[in-house]
Length: 309
Ligand SMILES: Nc1ncnc2c1ncn2[C@@H]1O[C@H](COP(=O)(O)OP(=O)(O)OP(=O)(O)O)[C@@H](O)[C@H]1O
Image (cartoon, rainbow, N blue to C red; front, side, top):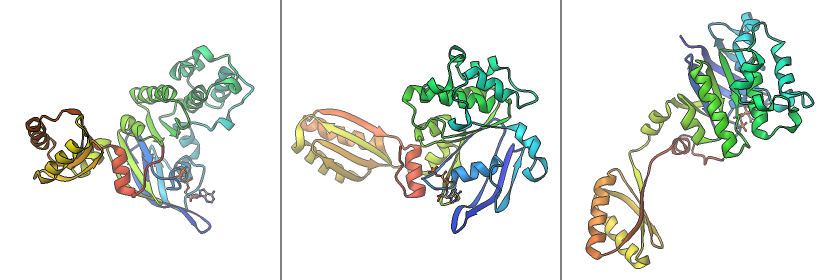
């Protein structure tokens, strides 16, 4: 049974329709990621699920319960990573966790929470002196302190350096190992691709597609991009480009200086033909690569918008 079910959610603010029609369901233990352009309605959707905003219409079921009748029980089932403004800047990491733990009947021990978010060594530091990554880990620890079944992480890695982002990824993977359900939003495609069991792309308040990262990528055309760079300069590249354009398996080819890019559904056959030609001419190939499609290509294909990082 789904642990979270959202059916035909809609929310307007005056003349602005933030969420037009959003439906999805999440299975227990999944990492479910919502991505979308700015203003797509992600935060509004999360806030409705978290009980912070009432929807205009539609229904939300959390573990078989709904906000209208079972608000108190739902509050104990979900954990929300608070914005940093919800933390007490002058209290230490440990004191913040202690305080949040006191709100719940059966919280994790502070030691467990510290360990989960790798802050044991920093427990005596005041929040105001934490690094961005440590702050964000504390925010997740505060969201987890009630030992909820579902945790909501709204852009937990935005603005963090690559190492700090990886530390958060480790926490998400650990939550999965513990059997928790994670609802994530992110602006980093690589992160969505790596961590998510399923990805839901929303645009203009609607779900435009929803599936596993590999199924979403697999829906795209089978076209692959080959990049080839020749050591023998522009003239050699021009000739090779001309040859490439006459190869049956090549859909199109472009050249910039000594670099050639071409698109094909049959990379192996195409490379045989190209290498046959360069070998015959005695041209030396400096670099060759085949670019795989990524979630970013899926995003652009479904929303028609460039991704911003
Ligand atoms: N309280 C509000 N009052 C008026 N308009 C709002 C309010 N909250 C959100 N909106 C509008 O609703 C739309 C969706 O906003 P939302 O914050 O849900 O998008 P988002 O996908 O989370 O965007 P971002 O990636 O920029 O955080 C936007 O046009 C936004 O300006």
